[in-house]
Length: 106
Image (cartoon, rainbow, N blue to C red; front, side):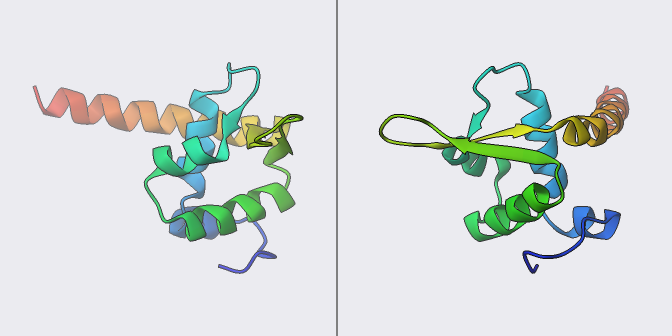
């Protein structure tokens, strides 16, 4: 996926974008955000895919990043207001699907 790709539902479907957005949303209450290394471990996708997708999400304003001010200068990510507005309905769909799967397994 090229870095300069416009964010579309098709792009969300074929990359780890939905998983990244949901992971950040589930950790939205953390005041300092989510470290890149933690995100890579939590998403279970290749680091190349994650980095390309993160760059697209950054470019399209769904996430923001910054570096810690002291060593080891870790990169940290958070959702933007736009990212939150996308994440909320995605999280609702995710909950509904998980609930349905849970019901059908009982």
